[in-house]
Image 1: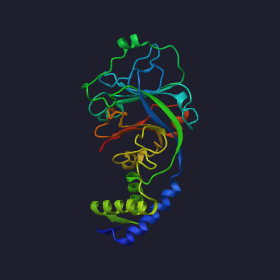
Image 2 (image 1 turned 30 degrees about the vertical axis):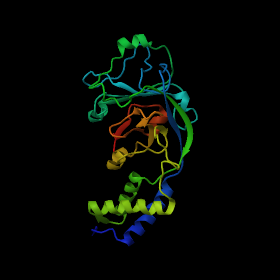
Image 3 (image 1 turned 120 degrees about the vertical axis):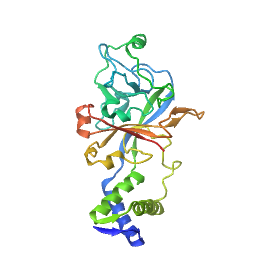
Image 4 (image 1 turned 180 degrees about the horizontal axis):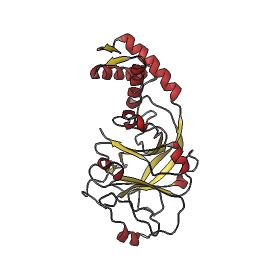
Length: 290
C-alpha cells in the first residue's frame, strides 16, 4: 500500500470523480414519512412522542436486566404510515429507552426496546397505567422528550445528499480500492475537499433551501451530527432501513420539544427482511450530538 502524507490536487480530483460516480450510482431518491410535532395531550393509540403508551391488557412495559422499566420515547399508529413501502400500515409501533443521561445507549441492547402490536385491542386505561406503567428515571431533566406531542406524518420523496458521513464512507472506499494509505489529518483534508468540490459543482446543502429544520422521519436517508455508526462495523451494514429517526426540535415559541444531548439525533435501523416480516426484535439504536 502506497503511503501519502499530502492530499495533492491530482488525488483530490481523481478521488472526487470516483466518489461522485459512486454516489450517483448507489444513491437515489427514497420515499419516506416526514414527521411533524403538535404539542398536545394524546390518546393512548395515537402517534406521539412522550406521553403514555398503548399497553394491551396482560402486557407490561419492557424492562432492562435490572428490572428498570423503560420509558416510551415514541409511538406510531401505523395507519399513519399507509403507503410507505415495506412499513406496516396497521397496528402500533413503539420505541422505548432507559430514562438516564445516556438515553440507554451504554447498556447495549438492554437499554432500549422496539415493540410492535399488529392489532389494536383491549388495553389499559390511563388510570390503570398509573399503576402498571412506572418507568425508571435517573433524573427529572434527562429525558430527551420535553413536551408530549402528537405526530403527524406526510409521505414525500427525499433526495440523497453527499453529507459528511456519506463522503467519508466513499472516500475510505476509494482509498482502499486504490491501495492508498493516508494519515488521519491528510484523510480529513481529503474528505473536506470532497465536500468542497461537490458544493462547487452542485451547490451547498442549505437548510433554508431544500434542507429540513426537523429530520424526524420514518424511512428515507438518515441524518447524523457526527457519523453513521454502521460505517465503523461491517457487521452493522445489514441494518439498511431507517425505521425511525428523532431529531432535536423546538416549537414556534423557541421552546425545546426534543433535546438529544447538544442538538443531537436518534436513529433506529432495521434489516429490510426483518421489517417485511414484522420482526422488530433486532433493531440497531444509536444517537449522537454536536
